[in-house]
Image 1: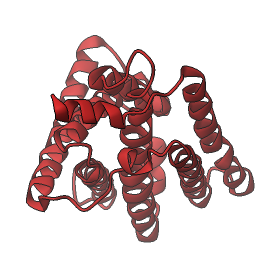
Image 2: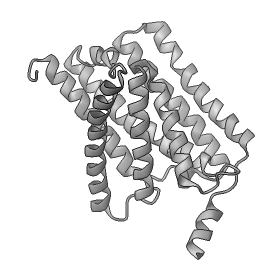
Image 3: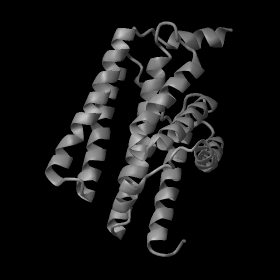
Length: 243
């Protein structure tokens, strides 16, 4: 009981108005920061990479300012070295396999429901342009933007904010479900299938953070590993190594 009380005390209350202000400012920074690269370079490889990275950097900077101002930075962005590295790596491996399984199951479910399959052709066409392009997408997108950035934003910033709201304070699963839904929506460019499957993955990643006592490393590693595998398979297929 004492530990539960201390845990709740760490979750300082957050008003709905302040939460909405934070959410809108982070989302606004993400959208606005990505526009200049596309305007200058168009929907080229350089333009899309520049836009993606700039958007994430801007969103993370604004999110960090909010977390620091509320005294919640270390709690929300828990990237401290894991106490048990073997356990963290095991959870990361479990997470990688589970996410790939969710993609496979999602494909079957979407087909059964008559929903169009996930369409990532816009990204894949850019990834497979050249070896340099492939390497840049792995480093800048799979590991920085998706693996690190999206975990800090969704499983870090957003889940922390939601669990401090009046009426939701300390309630893990409502926060996990809401962040998963918001995680899925930006993937609408992949079609509604992409939104639904990504949301289910977001929910699993929320659980993965809970299972690791708030530490984000298992989530970061699993997310980055899955994106690396998917992009590598697509690139191998473009070279004729896979059918």
